[in-house]
Amino acid sequence: MEAYQQTIREKISQMPLSSTRQMEAISIQISDAAFERMKSDPDYEAWVLNDLREAFSQSNPWVAATGGGYSVFYIGETKEQCHAEGWYPGCMGNQGAAMFEDKAKGSFWEQRMENHKKYMELQQEAAARRQMLMKLRMNGGSVSAAELLMGLL
Image 1: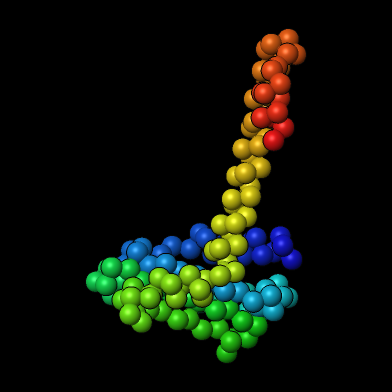
Image 2 (image 1 turned 45 degrees about the vertical axis):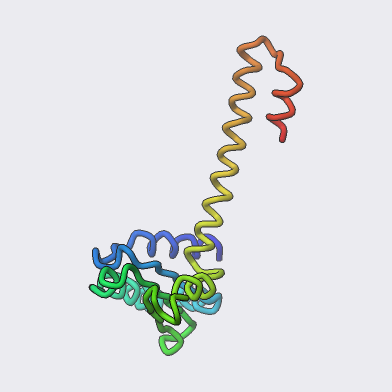
């Protein structure tokens, strides 16, 4: 299922946004049941992806006029369970950003960002190890205790 979810994430990430939505924070909440349904029902998967593509391409001039915007797309197991919410920064006594942060927890984008952070950390660790190995080779196998500890931490 993880590989399938990654495939869907990549497809969504490649969808273009209307230029009027560039200042809009977007969150996508896809339930586990929705992923299961999309995986087993190619027509439902196509419908979900097309619905998101259409939503992303729609013009929203209010985003620029209000200094930004927030949208949360909820994808459920059925078409009836799919819906979206949208609001602007000044909403609810200027609590628009806080509302978005709360509603975006555990979202598609947040999970994607967390996975990317983990990947980058692993890449940095691997690069540090490679650098240590190169230094060992260049110095005939000798390295200081401090360098060794830094490479292991």
